[in-house]
Length: 167
Image 1 (cartoon, helix red, strand yellow):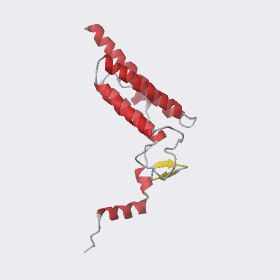
Image 2 (image 1 turned 90 degrees about the vertical axis):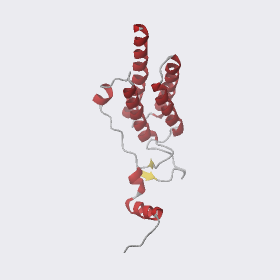
Image 3 (image 1 turned 30 degrees about the vertical axis):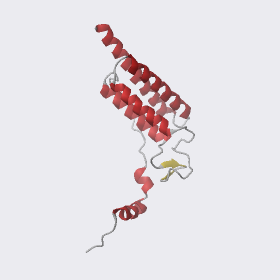
């Protein structure tokens, strides 16, 4: 019969063999122009898709504070080791963009002028964050993130104006 060991010791041994950085590394964003442009961003489903796709793009290019980060082609499992976060270092405050995306997601489910103003402010701040993080290497993906943010804002505004006119 085999010996019983603590689960955390087993996981440490298992991940040490495989390399935990490779297991926890974020995948590059999957961006399909047909999927991006074929959605109706005036609906809640379309807005949620857009916010999650922006999160996927920003997660890859800006990194997060709660997981491994890529530095010089290797994945750092300890985010507090003093290294810059993300493949494209030089961003400011990944917690800010994550919180802003959650607030944007929350404002997408609400209707009315207050939600529209809040959505516009959040999209503006996110666009500023994305623009500041843009480099020649990540320009294409971050441009898609900017496009998605614009589509979320404009389509929802257009739909709200159309419903206001029809009533």
